[in-house]
Image (cartoon, helix red, strand yellow):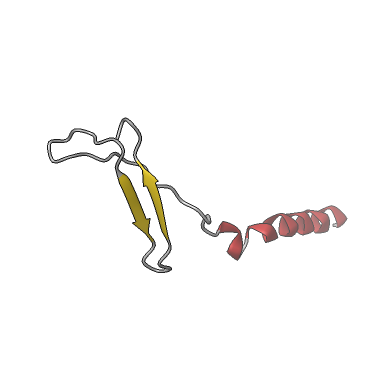
Length: 67
């Protein structure tokens, strides 16, 4: 009987950390891609700005030599 009680307690303590908020989204993300012209060729040294519509925050980056 004591073993069963300890087992139930252990299982409950193991499950608690995984409830609700433990599976929240990450704080940062990433955007990956290539800048191309209408013919499909990559374009180097292009300034790209990404804006979060919800917060108005924006990030700017420049494409490398491979577009």
